[in-house]
Amino acid sequence: MENDIYRDRILEHHRFPRHKGRLNRASVSAEGGNASCGDKIMLTVKWEGKKLANARFQGEGCALALAACDILLEHVIGMSAHKIAAFNPGDMYDLLGVSVNPGRSACALLCLKTLTRVAAEHVASIEEIREEHNSEVSEEE
Amino acid sequence: MTMTLTDFAHIKNDFPIFGNLPEGFAYCDSVATSQTPQCVLDAMEKYYTTMRANIHRASYPMADTATSAYEGARADIARFIGAASPEEIVFTAGATMSSNMLYLMLQEYLPLRPGDDIVTSVLEHHSHLLPVQLFAEREGLNLLYAPLGADHGLDHEATSKLIGSRTRILALTLASNVTGAIVDARPLIDKVHTSGGIAVLDASAYVGHAPFDVSALDADVIFFSGHKMLGPTGIGVLYGKKKLLERLRPAFVGGGMSEETNMTHMRCTDSPYRFEAGTPPIAEAIGLGRAARYLDELGMGAVRAHVRALVMYATETLTALSGVTVHSMRDADKNIGIVSCTVDTVHPHDVAHILGERGVAVRAGHHCAEPLVKTLGVPGTVRAGFHVYNTHADVDALAAAIAVARETFV
Image (cartoon, rainbow over all chains, first blue to last red; front, side, top):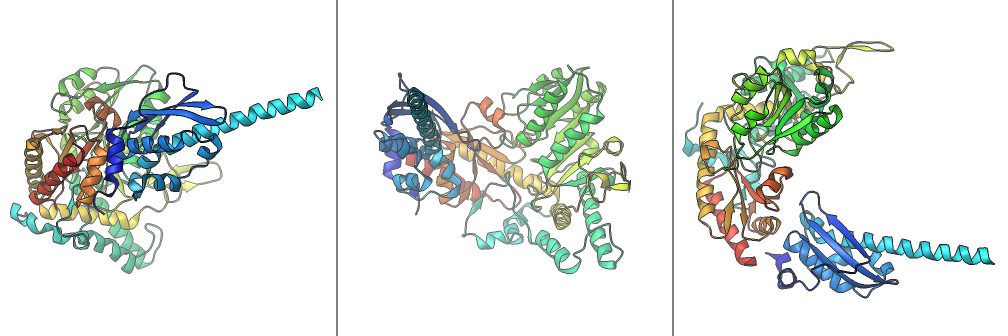
């Protein structure tokens, strides 16, 4: 399957990304990178309660890594942190719709790796707040 | 026997892998690892099928045969690089292991004071640079970087100026694994010797590509990997001048390296054996010795002429392609066999991927020389490295595939 990963959809998202940039009023910003490639991305994320209200990416990387950022963010905006944190590489490959060889998996998964980490941290902070709230309630009781 | 240049047209027949790859497959990734000739595979198989025994430690004849083959490989390597004797050759697991163990040993050996200098260069591969960084950090040394010249090679004049009375070590590559630039190390080595320091040279990208004489170079230590010079993986060399090796205490200890061991201490055996604790990669050492003999049979002068011609042709061909910027040493006389480029704004990984799908194997990225690639001001390069089996047709395939990659994105 020649040029398989460079199907129109990947090239389209690479040329005309919808979610490239930086949110001014982000809840969190997070960096991700591939040591072996030198790819670097910065995600800015806006949470509204559990929900991912908005997200943007910036960075340097190959077409696959950057298109994967755009495609993933497009898919997950509006989802809950729990659901995003549970995303796995198989989900990412399904979203890309192309077969990615092992040598390029780090490119395809860079955004996923960074975003799921951010989502997991958000889930943990929500649970922490809930626990604090519960313990305050029980102390009052 | 010295081959003529035309003999290289059939040299792929010596490398069985090319019979298993599609017709016309252009393997241009020999800087990462080179291919293995049948004679090297045969030498390793002969060890496994006719003399498999541990070395140095048994009295039965087969073990003697294995020991002779292993020590014969040491002698082959000594001859190949012009060492004064086989005792100056330590077999290691590779260049990275050589370099790491060396700096651990130098830490104890050298009379260092905080504020002393170690001079390295921006051209270094991480296998040399990172052990040097750690060494400098642990010892409180100033780490001085020799800069890049305008031709993507070392700025020799600026490097020379960095070497002074406080320089304890000159840690330098002999050729960049990204730009191919050959370093004219001898004057710099002389200068560091005048200052009472030692010279450590990374010869990984150099050895096996051009005639090499370590005695003429007068380096105190050099190291390289076997797998970049047509040898197997898992084997490398640490060369040290005999007098220096005799004074170093081994970084690693274990079986086979002590003369006497009692409950509280041991006495090391002689160099180089004391640096080879445990069972070494025996088959791989034998394979590497055979690789050195194979290269000698081709004639290192002929090998160099062949690779140089490919560099010249590739540099001309890629320069003529629109949208391509060459980041390697353009003067083929000063290039060990590597051409690096970028293609418009297309990321090097995307270029390399498309090349790979078209049967051209190259590497993209920072090539474990991140400070150098950052200095070049690019996110990475697409790198083609040539060896004896490459042909002008490989360069043509490379150029054609780069044109396709550019069309895909631009």
